[in-house]
Image (tube, rainbow, N blue to C red; front, side, top):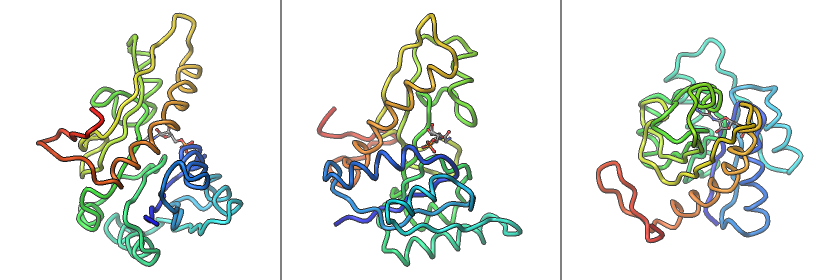
Amino acid sequence: MRRIGILLSGRGSNFEAIARNAASGRLDAAIAVVISNRPQAPGLELARSLGLPALAIPSKGLDREAYDALVIEALHAHDVELVVLAGYMRLLSPGFIRAFPMRILNIHPSLLPAFPGLDAQHQAFEYGVRVSGCTVHFVDEHLDHGPIVMQAAVPVRAEDTAESLSARILAEEHRIYSEAIRIVLSGRYRISGRRIVTEEY
Ligand code: GAR
């Protein structure tokens, strides 16, 4: 079974969706470990309740490279092949990217390259876009920037609030993240510049 490692900082609903798909066999992968920089993250508690290895690695007092070295060590100790960021609110160091080249995925709640950074759904709503969505991409050293594996569009409705839009985007996140993981684990894609070309489109 292919082993994935989840990094999260908060609620963990994307992690939960992936865990359900892995448990039901819709996603042919095992969650080897769940790691959080925040010991109080609800996602960690959720991992424990699902019987998955869950580690808190607090970052206090450590610089980025030193902290990431601890996380890399834990991922290796659990034989992780693919790292899945699921609401992990830290930039990864160059050392982290080198340790898992094209083996780290992130999900972001906008159609990148629009609205990188924090509170992307609110940024998009306030900007007045008619369509937003979410993006799964490989992680590089820049924020919300690496090659795109999958996107889903979510139309903005006249009656939307930032919250209602966020909820519909989140539902799409839960759908596409497992799909993107499946594609990456299958290896059935090639990279052309920034473009990920799959058999599916
Ligand atoms: C998700 O909406 C995810 O796209 C976003 O944080 C939320 C985490 O929710 N990530 C980012 O903004 C990364 N730049 P979750 O903990 O319920 O999965």
